[in-house]
Length: 465
Ligand code: TRP
Image (cartoon, rainbow, N blue to C red; front, side, top):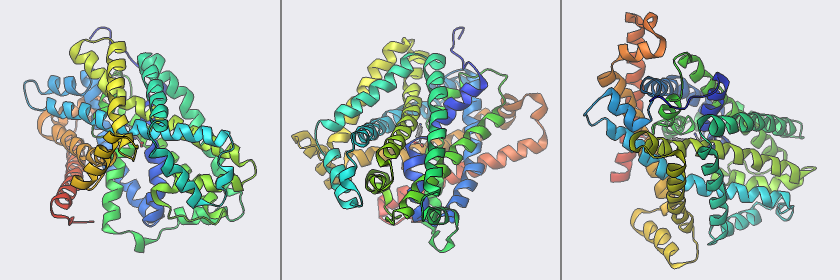
């Protein structure tokens, strides 16, 4: 590959990779699952998962990408020629389709909420979470409006990717990541200075070990994969644009530190406001789409806070979505020799169309919606949207993560991994042992999540759940 694109700087790479990691998972999902599962008790388990399993797989993916200078399918093929390992790469490309189809829909919802907030639309929802919920549900289950916003979101995503690795992904990550961090700081400080806001901090940071069930631990494990964008080759792809000079451990530590810090900051911003307003912290998935919109108008300059919040969430979603689309684009560039434009536009469009069906499955109001919503619900117990969500986060990602760790152990080999990771001087008996143990734990843990889900799906009872 003579002309492979490269990141422009170390900082640019770290911001792009953490841009992928920091997304809807950090700002929407982490706060509510931590809040529901024991606060700091959950956070402690989550941190442990990130440090032991997450860090190992992030580094493994970076190393596979950098050593081959190829995206997942090509990377596995190069390191394990004429074997079935390339299917792990294909699974990654498939996961990208699945995840981005519904992620793009949620991206559209967030975009819509920026406009609702700017135009003062939250005013009527003040202290009325039920009214806010009705508004949200009627919006997402309407036919065309969510699709329009989804298309705008996906178009922006395509626009960034078409501009390339350095001028597109890196450039936009360098602009958006600092804005996200600054806005979250402002919102967290705003929340802390509200009367009663400190209660929110206690809710998030005081451990309640009695609420930490076994299923919460499985949840923490699964979420550590999703939040770090692992298990589908995103980090392999981003790693493939790295040169040999970059220190992988150091970069990976930055990525997980930023990802975790932003999740905790988001939790602080959200729960301080929730407690100050006396709202329900157990809002679950609805926390940001109906509890918060009913709280913002109670604050002075509420429309501004609301707009800032949804803007930062939008940026976080966009930097993640581009990392997912890049996996598909890079596959068609590396393996099929397509141009970046052609791959991105063509597959951006196809994924958007799959996403349209996810959106229709929320209610939609036209015949096809009936099929994707209630028929899926009838046969699978969930809508097409949920199928795509669960298929990826419960099965495909843990499987991909498990295979990546097994690949290092059984095929690529710990010594080759170590020499990619840090050159000759790292390859000692002791380091081999440490890496072997970590990969073993990572594979075991990912395998366990997978098994647990499979058993639950088949028998209705999980081992843990
Ligand atoms: N990590 C992102 C989030 O927290 C989502 C994401 C981006 C992702 N790329 C991914 C998840 C690849 C799994 C795999 O929202």
